Length: 339
Image 1 (cartoon, rainbow, N blue to C red):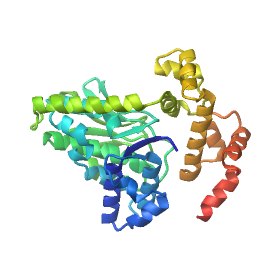
Image 2: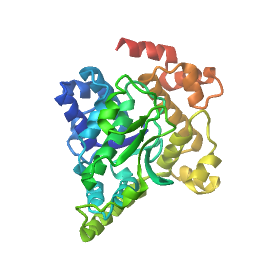
Image 3: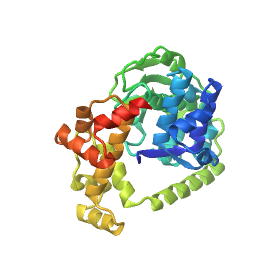
Image 4: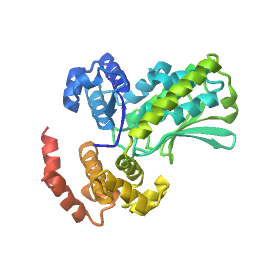
């Protein structure tokens, strides 16, 4: 399903960590239906669906629901490639964090949203978008991202305890006590967002590896890579990305999506037609993909899934699901439970 992607490098890091905890990586890949050849090139983009499957399998095999926190703790600047090097050679911590946000899509992208660095009075919040609904096998994604950010603030500056508070959108999980060990600061579960919060004054901390000339060259490379992604990004994919952030309890109109993309709806219709696509077919495609993900990865009821996807009634969702899969939602889940 098309919910976004990450690099093979990040997937390989998860597999390496899981193997160190006793997991059988060959079995993890087989269960996730992921070809190992896809991971041979660290720059290869891997659909986020596979990351979710691998994380679920790793948690099941190792019995370690805190694997995301461990993944964050094992992060390195080099894990972010050119983006990490550009951040490392920046002038200040604030400059470095802005680079991480600005070039986030070079390492991962998700149709649910993008990360942001937001000023909040005397504090700065580095926020990660919601991936709700959460379950025992999806929290690791948030854990891994926030944990990596916290680790990077130390790796970039050499200063500990820069993170003053961590906001977690989901309720405290079974391993909730481990967050204090991982972050060493106040943890707020059930918060309205996912974020690490720092003092605004700390954004001025100079970086020991700052190198203006090298930094400028690295920024140029990041810009060129980002432009390549933008040029390759079709209007079809742009619409799917926007739909992913809006398809929660409603079905956005093409006018609303066009507004998000900064263009008139008639222009968007024309652009999609030039790509042999149509808005309603993309809404149907996104609904199908998200529905399949909810069915496979959550215990949400059919009524809850119907609401989240903007269907008028649960019956309308069940009819659409049978059209997509040839099975009713109940039949689909029964088959899943037998695997």
